[in-house]
Length: 55
Image 1 (cartoon, rainbow, N blue to C red):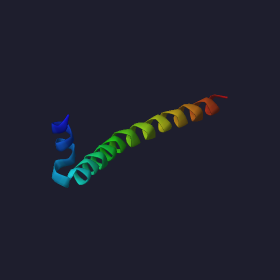
Image 2 (cartoon, rainbow, N blue to C red; image 1 turned 45 degrees about the vertical axis):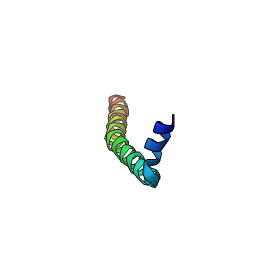
Image 3 (cartoon, rainbow, N blue to C red; image 1 turned 90 degrees about the vertical axis):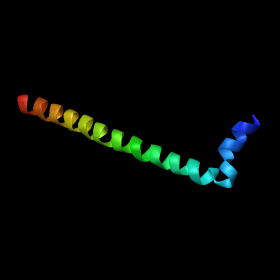
């Protein structure tokens, strides 16, 4: 357990390193989710528009 805590602390640099990893993960997740959600929104909007035009 001591080795794990030492690894996470990284001689005092742990908070900077792990926050950099967290920020990178969040940015990558947003880069994946944003276009996916926009595509879904576009498909739903087009489906609604086509239903309105048929009536």
